[in-house]
Each structure stands twice: as structure tokens, then as C-alpha cells.
Length: 181
Image 1 (tube, rainbow, N blue to C red):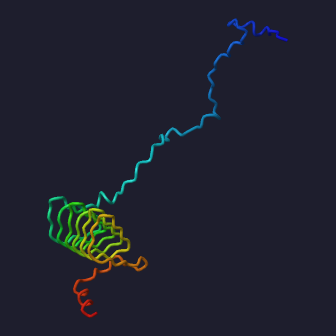
Image 2 (cartoon, rainbow, N blue to C red; image 1 turned 135 degrees about the vertical axis):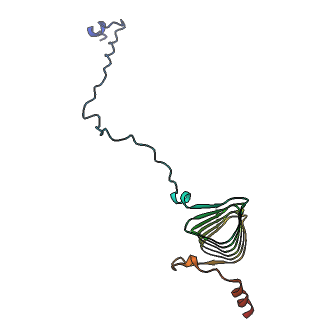
Image 3 (cartoon, rainbow, N blue to C red; image 1 turned 180 degrees about the vertical axis):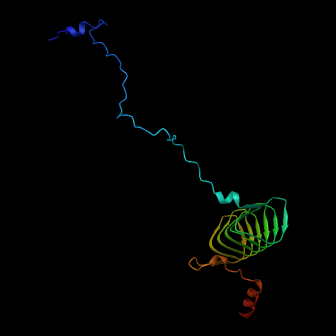
């Protein structure tokens, strides 16, 4: 019943346990390793997307700079200083220390500072530090808690071509409407 096998007795360990097999290094075969062309570079992690147009078409009115006159163009404008005049560009960012006194026409307007005048844009965002006095004509409007806004909002219809670039209402027309009523 408890008989020992002779093959176990011949082991060098003297405990009756068979010896461990010799370790072998597997040899790779052509089927187990994929063949890659020698010119294929190692894959790299994707780089985060960078808006190319922002850096190349950005104009900045720096803090402490005062400018009087109109600005127009196809690029973007960052206002950290003081601007007296009308603005007509694709994107306008008014920083916390920035101010604009005049009409602002843009596709996208991001306000953290002050605007005194009419705003005509597709998208308008008033951040908590924004202070706006004037009428806004827009397709989309977002106002953060803490933002100060004095004026009227006029929602432009999205399906109307050029709706965002409607002319801002003139104060004279508004007064005439009030006296006629």
C-alpha cells in the first residue's frame, strides 16, 4: 500500500521527492512574434489638442493700456486694459481688469470685466466678476451668479441667417417707442 517508487529514491535530495525539472528558455518562433516593419516608430501618447487659431490671431490690449478708437478684424481680442470705441471681431475676451465703452459685435463674447454699451453676439458669457450696462442681442446667453447686468436681452433666432449680427437697438428709437405708448 505504501510502497516507494524506485524513481523517487534516486533523487539527490534524499526526501523521496522527485527532482525539479531543469528550467529551459523558450525559443521564439516566427509565428509567435509579430513582424513589424523596421521603419515603424514606437507609438506615442496623443498630444492634447491646441487651438491653432487662438495663438496666431490673438490681439491683446494689456492691463494699464488705454485705447480710443474702433477695432475690427477676423481674429480674437483680449481686453485687459481700457477701450473706448466699437469692437467687431470673431471672439472677444474682456478680462477682470478690462473695460469696453462702446458697441461689441462678436461671434463669441466672454466678459469678466466691464462693458458699457450694446452687445451683439452669437454666444455671450457673463462671469461672476462681469459688470455690463447695455442691451444684449444674442443667440445664447449665460450669466454666472454674481455678475451684474443692467439692460435688456433680445434673443436672436438661430434659424435666421445673420441673426447674431443684427444691429443693436439705438437709444433714440427706444425713447420714441416709450413716448408713443
